[in-house]
Length: 168
Image (tube, one colour):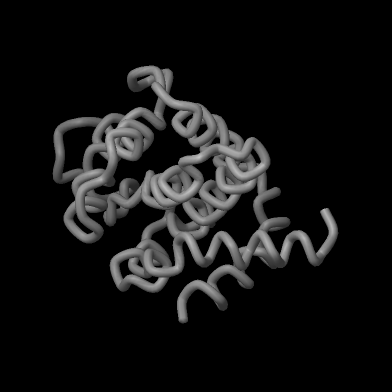
């Protein structure tokens, strides 16, 4: 992808999620490890930007809702490697906690956003019910794989530009 198109995508992405990115609770996600050396903030930006680009390319009318739900899919705000205050395993617990936090800090999510967040762990969760839900589920798995094998570092320049623009 050429640099100008990537820059335009970053600008549009930040227009959609900039208010979320600058929120102190979303910033707090930088404190929580996710996959290996990757923190939850980096992972969710990586996933949501990937989701954004696919949804935009497919001209999905719910681009804004899809992108915002993707950013909040892991908005659980705890270190799942250490914090075991709940009885469920992290894989089943964290989508519910992410949705609770999303609605606590950003207001009620749409039905599609709720389902995207709750079902993104498919096949451990229910099957996604929307195109946005399927895109999120598969991007999350792809990005998690990239995190674990060290290839998500290729996203670092885009992440840095997004955080520079979006956290203003």
